[in-house]
Amino acid sequence: MDDLADLSATALLDAFRAKTVSPVEATKAALERIARLDDAVNAFCLVDEELALAEARKSEDRWQSGSPIGVLDGVPTSIKDLLLTRGWPTLRGSRLTDADQAWDEDAPSVARLREAGAVLIGKTTSPEFGWKGVTDNPLTGNTGNAWNETKTSGGSSGGSASAVALGMGALSVGTDGGGSVRIPAAFSGIVGLKPTYGAIPIYPTSPFGTLSHAGPMTRTVEDAALMMDVLTEFDSRDWSAMKPPSQSFTSGLHDSIAGLRIAYSRDLGYAAVDPDVAASVDAAVHVLASLGAIVEEVDPGFDDPREAYHVLWFAGAGKVIESYDRARWNELDPALLEVATIGRGTSAMDYLAANQVRADLGLKMGAFHEKYDLLATPTLPIGAFDVGQEVPTGSGMTRWTEWTPFTYPFNLTQQPAISVPCGLTADGLPIGLQLVGPRHSDALVLRAAAAYENAVPFGRPPLISSSR
Image (tube, rainbow, N blue to C red):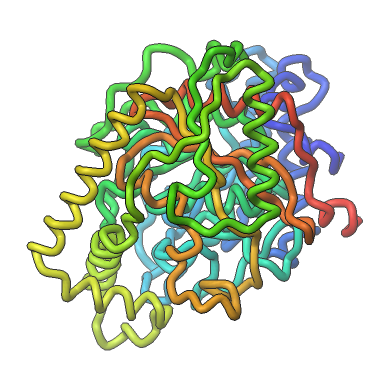
C-alpha cells in the first residue's frame, strides 16, 4: 500500500475512476509515509489523521456511487501554514500567534480544494510569517530536505516541498512572495508554479502586498495544471483577483513546443552560478531546443533589483509584526525582527521609489516578451546547503535574497514562473530549471515545462527507499 504514496494525483484519480484504488487506501498510504519519514524532515506542523480518513471514506462512497464532487476528489493534499484552514490553527510558524481562537474560515485556495473533494491531511511548516527562503522558525524548528535531511528544504514553502517530494500527500498549496514556491521546489526535486499575480485569489491580503502569490506544489506538471483549474476559481474576498480562465489548464498541456521562442539567460547578467547547476540547466535548455523550440542565449537586460525588493519586502515584514505585542517581539526569529525594524523605518518616498523600479522592470520584461515567448534560467544558482542557516556557511552572504537572484525579480513583475527539476548537483541534490512567461501566459509556461518533464523524467528522493 505504501507505494500508492508515490502516485501522482492524476494517476490516483485514474485509479479511483477505475475502482482499482480507493481514496481511503491512498490517504492511508500518505499517512503511513508521514509516520515513517516526517520525523526526519519535519515537514508537518499539524496532521489530522482522524479527519483525513473520515473525508477519505466520504470520497470513497462518492466514487463507488459514480458521483465525485470535483476534479481532486479523494487526493491527499497538504496546506502551507500561512493559509487559513477551517478547524485547524494557522500559527504561521510564530510563538506570537494565539492558537486559542476561532479558526472558522478557509483561505480561498483551501476553500476551492475542499469543494473539489481534496482530502486535507495537515498543515506544512514555514519560516515565521513566511519571511525568508529557508524553512525554520522558533515554534517548530528546522525543516530538512527530502533528498538529504541535513540540508535545507528551501522556503518559505519548505514543508510543502518536502511533503510532496516524499509522497506525504500528492499535492500541496504554497505561497510565493520572492521565490517561496520555486525555491523549495528546486531544492526538493518537485514542480512549483508561481502563477500570474491575481490568478489565484488570496485572503486575507498579504502584508507583503502584491509581491505575494499562491501556487501549486506537485510532483508532475500535469498535477500542477490540474490544481490550477481548482485554485483559480473566483473568490470575492480578493479584490485584485483576475477573472477565472475560460479553458482548462490541462487542455493542450502536451501540445508541441516546436517554434516556441525561448530566451536563455545563464545568469541574468549579474548572478554567480555554480558550475554543476549551469551544466544541468544548459543541458535542459538543449532538450527544449531538441523538441523544436527556437532557443537564443540572451539576457533580458536589467540590473539586479534586490535593493528595491528589500525595501518592499522589509516594509512588509514591518507590517507583519506591528499587530503583535511589542513586549513579545523578542520571541521572534531575530533576523525577522532585524529586517522588520529596517522596514518600519522605510519612508513613503523610499517605498514609492522601489515601486518605480518595479514598474520599470515590468515595462522592460513586457517589451522583452514581445520577442520571446519564454525566458529560461536556473531556478537557483546553488544546491541546498546546511539546514537551519539563512545563507550558506562561509559564503559571506547576509540575507537569503543573495542566493535567490533568479526568483524575486519575477515577483516584482508578477509574471508566471515555474521550477521543474532538471538534474542533480555533484553531491546528489536537485537542481531546478525556471521558465518565465509574460503575464497571463500560465498555460504556456505549464506546456513548456510539461514538454521538458516528459522528455527527461526525474527520480525520487533516496530517503524513501533508505528508510524502509
